[in-house]
Image (tube, rainbow, N blue to C red; front, side, top):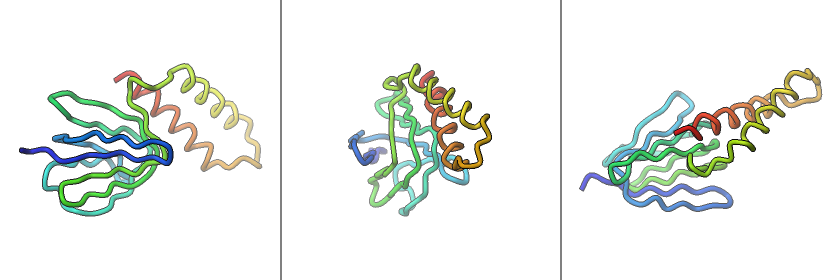
Length: 132
């Protein structure tokens, strides 16, 4: 058997994906893949796309920042948020993107630019993955 166990955990949701043959995650230094017998460790995750290969099908998720724990052929992704591509509310994501762009264009010195850029990134990520 060439599969490993995958679970995705957020503060409000726990997805037990089960046995998968491949997962691609968004690291801070670029995407990285996980297969059976991957080296054990903890890896920081960035906002991005998680691709999972299960039952000969690819599944895509929009995720927030977090960590990947890889131990004994079990992978647990601890992330701020997760949405399967088919669950993404495109109208809501477009609204979030428009609001973030508007706030950024206002050039208000009181705005936290780091949070604003993260908001833009999350909205764009959700829109891209919604098309998968």
